[in-house]
Structures are given as C-alpha cells and as structure tokens.
Image: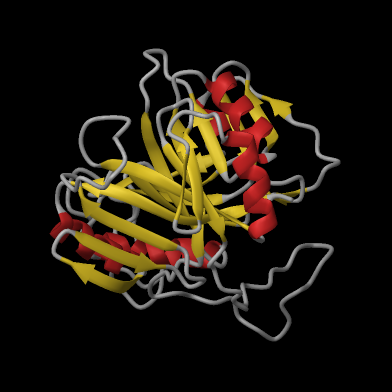
Length: 322
C-alpha cells in the first residue's frame, strides 16, 4: 500500500486569461474550458486545474491571492483508498465523495486521494556518455524547441510547522523522509522506492503558510533547457535557472506563474530505495544550487539575460564574430 504520486492539482487564480496562455505555452494540453474553470493535462493525464479564485466550491486558501488550493494524490486501488480513509477519518475536514477521500493537512491545505487516473506513457530520454559508460553511440543528443511535461512531479509549500506536517504525511499515508534541513525543511517521497521527493516542506522564520512552487517532470536535461528557452521566448519571467540542485541532483529552471508562486521544469533527480538514509543539511545558497543562472537565458539570443537588452550573436560560428 502506497501513494503513487500526484494525480491532480487545483489553483484558485485571479487572472484566468493570463493563466490560460501561460500553461499552454508551458506545454500542457487544454482538456476542457469553462468561463471560470480551465482543465489542463500533462502527457500522462495528470490534471492541472485553474479555477477562478471566487468560485464557491474551491477549498479555502492558505494565503491571499492566486495560489494552490488542492492536491489530489493517486493510489493503486479501492482497498488502498479504504485503508487511508480509516487513517484520516478523524482528521479536520474529512470528506468522502465521488470516489475521493480527503481532509485538511496541518498546513491548512486541502488534500484528496483517489484511485489514480494517470496513464502509462513510454518516452525515450537522452542517452548519455561518461568516461566509464557510453550509452550514446553514433547518435546526437536531442534538442527541444519546447517542453511537453510528463506529469506534476512534486509540490513545495511553506509550512508553519514542518515536523508536524511531516509526521502527518508519514503516519497517515506512508511518506518517507529523503533528506532534511533540521527543524526547517523536509523532503518527502511517497514510498521507499521512488524519486527523491514528491513533497517538500519549508519553514520560513515568519512561519508563513503558502505555495513555493509546483514542479513538472520532463524527459531529460535537454528538455529542461529547450522548455525554458521557449518560455523565455514567449515573454515569461525566469525566477532562477537553469541550474542544478546538489540535493536531489536534479536540473531545474524556475518561472513565475500567473496562477500562483512559481513553476519548475526538472529532470534527472535521484532515485532512492528503502536502503537510503536521510541526510541533514544546513540551508545555504550552495546547498540549494550547485550552479544557477540568475534571471535566466534569453530564448532568442541564447545568452544570459541582463539589465540591458542582450546583443544577438554574430557570425556563423563562435570564432567568426564581428
């Protein structure tokens, strides 16, 4: 019995028109559309819903403004759903309706569980060559004109009490700690065998509750770059990236999201098993990013953005410049 991952997220947003354009540029497909509710899908059917913040049927927000209102986690079957329902039957906001169970977590977020509706997808990522392993022979690495996200891989929240929130997910749903900032942050994965984290909890000094970012999994580092360059060409603002996290080892690129907080393209995270022992880290810039480009890369010039308009490269090759 284990949670499989994120099946669906719902934003309550103030500007649906801008959010619609952003998520289409981001690479999601528009599955359905109403005047006050948009439903997008990733390649494997993970749903991203953007609803008007004023809709009465939305769960309460953890913070003012556009933000995430609900996270739906997928499970394998009805038996798992029944076991989890027994665990949270006395939790605040418990509900059981329409094939879903749910409650409110200690951070004030509405969480739901359902039998997963995501599809299996077969996708080829880039092979790579190292000194000891030559996985790519007589073949160039791919280059992407844009990204097509596979799924929502993880969510990150500011929590008022990280240890209490971590204990809630561990005790009720079997989440496992991967790494920690002691007393300040916890990286949690849904099951002993899986990617580095599905949920990351951070505690600010002011104990603010809210969304930090939603992360979308793509095939490989090249799709992180191709997707980020496309979003930059579309005129959206980078928050940080591209770059690489020492914790999780993933490559990233963060963008500002009109539906709330940030969104991330990421790839190549660590895969862990029950043998993994959680590590402890002191927060700091070099712990967060091994390297990162502040302000992003201009999608047209392919150079780092700066305060002044970047000059387009000249000449057909790097040594052929005027």
